[in-house]
Length: 339
Figure 1: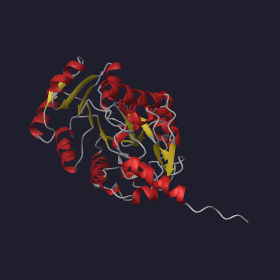
Figure 2 (figure 1 turned 90 degrees about the vertical axis):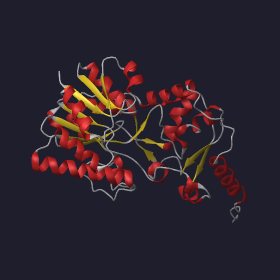
Figure 3 (figure 1 turned 135 degrees about the vertical axis):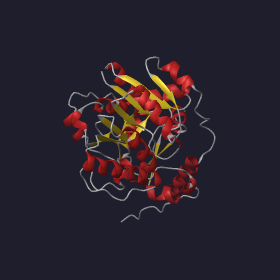
Figure 4 (figure 1 turned 180 degrees about the vertical axis):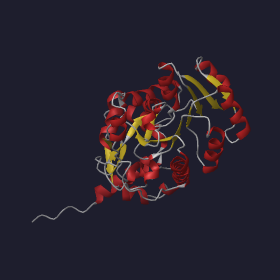
């Protein structure tokens, strides 16, 4: 069976990739930092310690393992892509580059968005650099036949990352819901999100590995269906047994609230609809069976309660302030005249 060399991980997505490949008897190596603890978790994986920007060490490790396939999960700049290309260009059957759906630009030009639809300008250096890397690899594919496959994960829930309506990656929302405290919901709750379980997205990457029909193609990677914001919250509420009130607040009001501009946030998390068409992946890999998104929600909640990672939900945060001010506006809103 083929050997697969993974740059980065095991992380939110790549842990699923590793498990999927091992289940199918691939030989797997991971090039990463801090390998001592990771070795104990993956006895059947070869680990190589190193900095991906150290081209000589990367080349030494890659050649020592003798991989035919490479999966790059942590490539963030064109310069990093160029170094990898120089190391592997004549020695592999496939390179899978993990990009992002953010290269499509927001708001999406079509709902649901297909890989063939027009892109809008990517927002932020992260997405812009991912797009430049894609262009670099496409150029090598068209000019030289370089065997690249591009995977673009959507928002992916995992133990350390939980897409939520507004901010904090779920770490405040979950304990608030458990305590049946009010939850802020941008808009009317019917806006679309497209969230995948990071572990399952990783398995999708593993399914692409070593498959010749994936060469020269790009795939959006997520759960097979999108979900409304309300239904997404309901996944958490159901697992927690929560009856939290949902406070629906216009996105424009949230955006202009004093202090919101200082909070790190993802542009599309509450401002726009996210929905992607996964027909390309389904057509090429009809045997793939998605795992329920509920499993990702359950994992996030259980792992972080074990870690004691959730903060005290009663400590006031900006979400409380927004809800309080919005409810005051509604209370003071002039009554409709009677005719």
